[in-house]
Picture 1: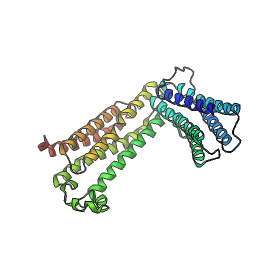
Picture 2: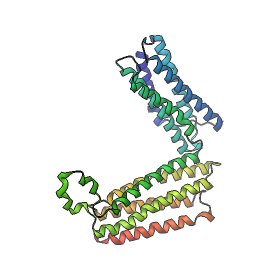
Picture 3: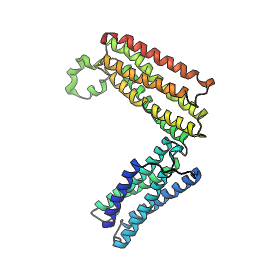
Picture 4: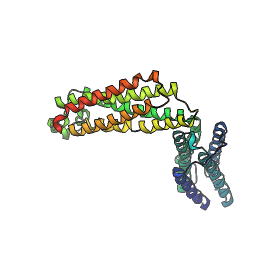
Length: 333
């Protein structure tokens, strides 16, 4: 089993290097060739993982030479995929490179898990864990078809995920605020020991709290609208024809990733007992992020002059809700 232990060490080393690896300059880069070759590397990894799994699914075990051959085949397939990631130039977009890196890392992680399961199996038979691990490798290898093939698509996928998180946060706060008085109603009803705790004002919103929630929800909804409009602008006007346009897409991806954490922080601070000073601080953070997003959007190619009215409108909405939040929290200063 020494070849398997060595394979495991090598796979972990490849994964560690992948996280820190830089792209190589590739003036002869051809996108179609890259994706075709990456697909072949993933397919080869899937096939080699299947060979490995079948070889250790029932007695007799492979000979040391056979085990070495299986280990070499699987490692070479993984190395081919990792090497291809390094060949993807930064000029193609950092967001695209991250998507490809995550895809390759998913395959390596699945392969590591499979080897670990085989090494830890006490009974040499096809276990449920081995079946699951093999399936995980297949699934990770098949994911390459869903990987975005250029930077615009990578940014759209990323931003769509941010939008989903923001939608969930808004829905949770709206559902909680729509309850009669107590946002912890369902939790407390499930625990008889907390029955007396229902009289604790810390589990309720005061009238002042509810007034403050309105502009904060307004900021959260402005976040949702901002991401929706920006996604529409990306799909309508986004381009990957120049390095400048690709870099602008990366800038938008970088700044918009700050929206959902800022929305989450504000949402959490709205639950009782509400600290108005903390709410104001989190609202100001979200407002600042949104203003940056809108500013970078306005200066980018995805927002031509004739289509910039929504940027101005949302900027005004952010200012309006932030001003209301400040007015309602003056006494906390």
